[in-house]
Image (cartoon, rainbow over all chains, first blue to last red; front, side):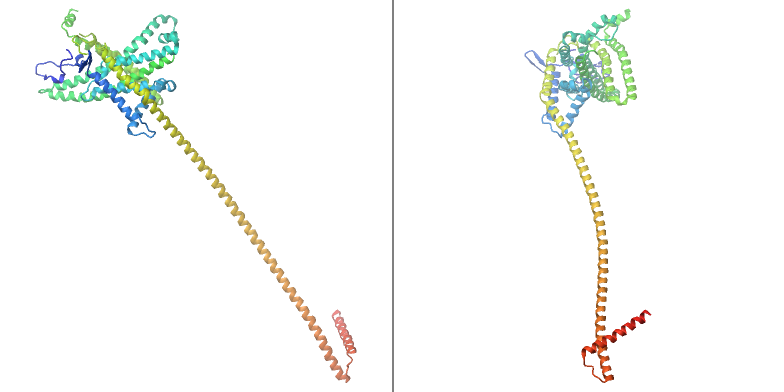
Length: 269
Length: 80
Length: 177
């Protein structure tokens, strides 16, 4: 299947018509380029990512650009979100003194990811941008570069390497085994799982939503209408669940970023 | 053995992937259960440390759940 | 990206990666350069304002406490003063009464004294007049009886005085007896 194929809703295939269930798959994550500029193909997820930038920047610009000591409604909401990330994530993991430096990084990342996730349930958009590995991989790469540079800047080259692969207080015999494993898990597996966690959550969530929406359309024939209703209820329920998962995954992503930064700041973990 | 080979050759790999995902979900399922069970116990014992406990709980949940999610993705990576 | 062959979902597409990083870069830059400093400034200001407000409230409370103390002290002073004044007034009243009593006593005694003096003077005057009258009458009487004018005034009065002296002596003897 290629991206040039139409969406499931555009088919006229229903149950008992003799055509199989058009199950969602990888093709659901491929998009026709909207336009092309010199070989650079611009598609819907890119548009949504840029829209996320616009939404986050627009909202926080409106809330924080001219802040007042006595906040208005918008500023109050913005401050609640800002304070949640600052106090609940950064201060809790990195600590108040050293964490202050990373507050803009973490706050912007949290809200950017969250808004990108939310496109999953916004009508017409209905696509979680991080379900394409490129977006979470880019962010995870930025986080990886950040904590790696902190690590080597803080501890020097030898100390940095040691911080990456050495764990104190274990029997000596285990180190030959442990050091390569630690090194691999910290340097290679960490960014991979960091990116894949967000990607796979959004990917799976989008698939779930697609399965139930496509099913409720596909079942609209004869007796199937009764089951279509059930399927539609599941769409609503899964949408609610997805809303929760989206916020949770954004939280987890920045929480892990904070944990990595904290691990780089302090040796011997 | 030959039956399985026949099945694989017939291209019903999607179902095999589902079984694979089911297997992949066992471990994380147990892990998530343990994490939330112990988290709840910790919360009941020390309600004043709720923030810290919940944070670590979610962290552990996310680390554990990643395995199951990788299980979801793998069929798409190696499936066809 | 749309490509005809099978996609591996774990291989990032470079254009998407670039766009994603660019989008995040914009968000991060805006937060880093503008929004977080500006909101932090306001949060600090607010914290200061709240702390300042608490300080002000503390000050006001201290002021109120001070004023209350002052008021209480003044009240105690006033009570003390009132008690003192009352006592003074009582003392003054008592002194006044005593003084007036003394004055009355004195006046009474003066009046009595004056009365006595007057009485004495009157008595003396009366005695004097009586003596003269009695003397004249007795002389007249004796002259008439004797038939002889006792015109010699000096002898006359000597005789009278002697007579009266005898009378008095007799009266005194009578009293002594």
